[in-house]
Length: 564
Image (cartoon, rainbow, N blue to C red; front, top):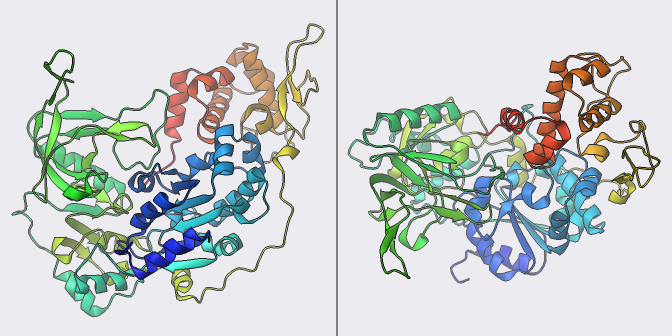
């Protein structure tokens, strides 16, 4: 505790007292370190992050918030999610007293309002977040939430934020960078106000040669396409044997899209690599540590029964890191994801998004006109420890931008939204349950509400989600069903019942006056909804839709959410 800054102690004491706080500050101020101390002191604590990368870096059993909360993609209403939520997720909500959410800058106002309502329903408590103590962690001056519409919204724009958070603690002491000149540049860059002097200093880092460096700087770019092509071209140019390492995880488990490691890692001798986990901080081997593969070896272990040396047959990479240490890199376990992988990635190039949270030994950054997002130039610049380890491809004063609303928020001049009018919390019990009905008088089993037998598709007010766990389609017109026309709930249920009756696609198409292709397309869409929204296994989706596992997997892969 003696090594903590004044602000870190203030935040720690507030959390111990049970206050809900927002912990913020520039990169390198020890936010993650403080989370670790809180984890050792607070009982019934859950640690989550808005991205898979951040969750992995936090450790302490951290999970992505969506996974911990059991909300799938978080697109449905709170009432509906509460109704469909699995018992394990409900238990997590009820058993937790304090919830940490890291990278809160990626949390949208809509999602914040939904989870606030969900917490009230599941916990049976009408206080903000159902009475949970909340610790939001992050920096709104870094990368903003993903907004496909281009209209960025921040969590603090919701009145729910102000109902939850009673104290904001901004960490000021930077531990990552020791050079006061470089720290001054970072302070200006964070708020998007780069001085002429700082710009001149950064320009001195342009056009420098790194040929004398055995470990080359990592190129940080804003777009994935640049990164992928650079990494592939460099690994392909190396001679020698190729070694491929594939992530190990339980059959049927889907990996998050924003994990920090690579599912399939290709290496050769001479490959420039980066460590993607905090392997051994005492040895200086942390997330972002740079190195080069010098050889591959098969390590043996002594069999306790026979006394003989045995190997697992795998040739592991030996990496010489920039600090001079040599390490054999074996499979590393991320227990919170039930995944094992060699904790390296190619480091010729990296996206600025992927670098967020990492501390790089050396980097070549592009902070010119192509840097297109608020906070992106600052995140790139703050990844390195000192200006001596910084190489600049291009620099432009216009690249350093901070969102105007965020600047007002941190300056204390943001006009917070008015409080919400009190409203009754909807109960998940108001949604009728659906049961499989025991056949009577020789009729085949159908589906109905709370024991009511039906032999036809459900009435109009019945939700398609209640019947088959599928989100309802968009509002429909009164046009008759035909190929290309919107699908009504009754039609979809009728189609799925026909699937259960082993009807062919052609027979179903004739019934609905649609083409076989239209039926097939609709079934694939439903399969994707099942997989991403309800997290159903493919084997179960096969039974419901009648599609093969291969077809479902292809449909799921095509609709995989985009990443940076």
